[in-house]
Image (tube, rainbow over all chains, first blue to last red):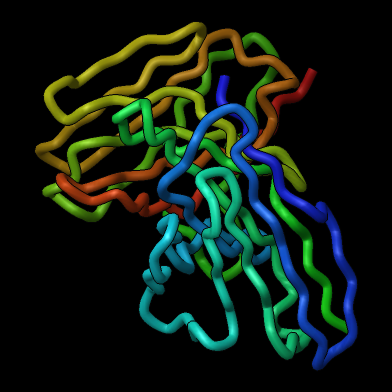
Length: 117
Length: 112
């Protein structure tokens, strides 16, 4: 099946620093990738939709200047959390939709655990 | 069930029992529904999906039932195993939309 990877799997950073998370589709091309955030014991909340070669579409309440998204190729999207604060600590999950598949299926990555001290 | 604060509704079953996990979805225009399994510290794993033109779909040991009249979705797991222990989420997608909306989740605990 389609595989999506994320790097790093875990990251700890100091408050005020920036952290970049990568999402890669390993065996398919993804024109669209999605970034979610999940707090403990809660559901996944969509942050933004990332389209290859164009600007990301952010959900209401998500600061685009704080969560920078770059979808530079058909297999890679990056999320940069800028000037991270402890309240940004969360589980960040990406998903990707197969461009060739023509369907609605999203394949999820394994997630990145961000801890901001 | 409803998620109140930080408490996930939990379903506890014995190994070998059948499990039924329920989900109420919000958008009557949604036409595609998916169940995901999420183990601790991992991303969601696709289990089964169903389109709105169907009311039942079966997979290996799993069945999804869709009742559009009351906007209700259920996941039935036959002969539940300890490895089925996880949090289960339903997700919905509307027509022409590419984004998924996740439900609140149910934790399934299977005792040997």
